[in-house]
Length: 171
Ligand SMILES: [Zn+2]
Image 1 (cartoon, protein in one colour):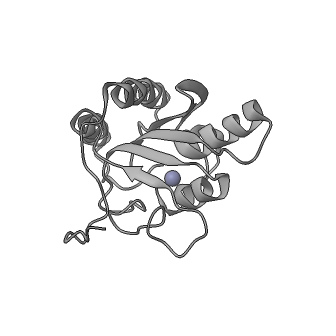
Image 2: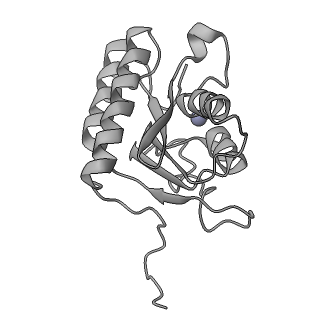
C-alpha cells in the first residue's frame, strides 16, 4: 500500500474517451437547462455503458429547490430501474455535486461520480466538503473530477457573465 502525500482526494484527469462521450451528453443537457433560463448543469446516469437516465438543472422552472441535475437524473434512474438502489452506476455531471446531491448519490448507492468543473464555493466532492469518498459513511463513491472541465467551466462562466450573477447559486 502506497500512502499518498497529497491531501486532496480529487483525481483530476481528462478521462477516458468513454467518460468524455458521456460528459458531452451531460453538456447537451446543461445547454437544455440554459435554454430554459436555468444555470447550465446537466447529468446522466449510466450502467454497463448504457444510458439509464438524464437530468438537467430546473429549480426555477419547477419551483423546486431540490431540482438539481443530479437529483432529476437519480429520480428518473430509479423509475427506469424500478429500484431505489442504483448500484453499479456511474453518474456524470458537468459541475461538482453540492451537499444535497452528494447525499442523494450516497443514498442511491451510485458506484462512481465523474464531474467536469469544480465548484470552489459549494462542491461536496472534495472542494469544500468531501462527502463521497474517504468518509465515515457505509457507502463510498469513487470520484473523478476534471473531465472536460474547461468546456463546462466556460459554459458556466458565460452564463453568469450574461446574467451578471455571481457563480455558486443554481437558481
Ligand atoms: Zn446539487
